Length: 155
Image 1: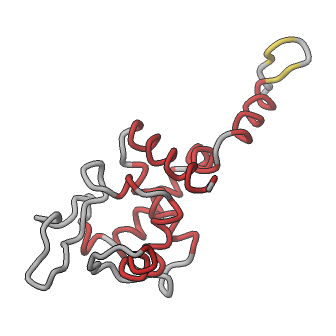
Image 2 (image 1 turned 30 degrees about the vertical axis):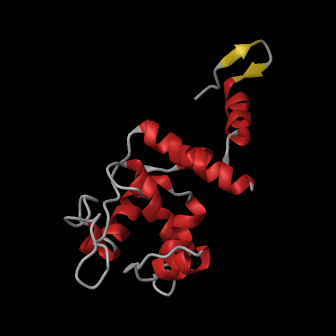
Image 3 (image 1 turned 180 degrees about the vertical axis):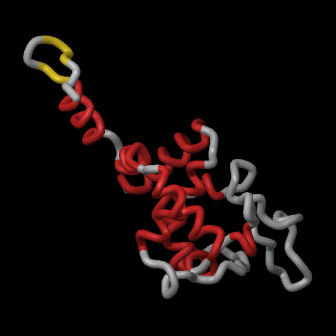
C-alpha cells in the first residue's frame, strides 16, 4: 500500500508519527489500544472486578451511602461514577495496593472496601482493565480524565 503524499517529498505517515510522539502519553496510548487489548481488558475486568462493580460497570446500588459497617458499596466505573475523576497513576495504585492503603497515604478519612490486586494482576493487566473501562466512556469524559492524568504526571 503506497504512502499518501502530502506534497512533493512529504508523506502522511511521518507527520502522523510525529503528531503521536508529541501527544501526552495517555492520549497517545489510547490511540494504540486495539480491539484485542480492549477484549483482554474486558475479560480481566469480568474475572476480577465485575462481582463488585457490575458486569456492565454499573456498580452496586446506593454506592454513595455507607452500609451498616461504614463501607461504601462498589461505585460504578461507567460515566455516572467517579472513576474518571482520578488520574491513571492513582487508579493503578488503588487497584494494585487497595483503596485503604492509598487513602491512608493520602490522609483521606474514608473506609474503603476495595482490596488490592497487585499480587494477582501485573501492571499490564491493570492497565488493560483501565483501558477497557475508559473505552466505555464518552469522548468528553475520556478527554477530561486524560487531562487529569497528564497534569498529575507533570507534577
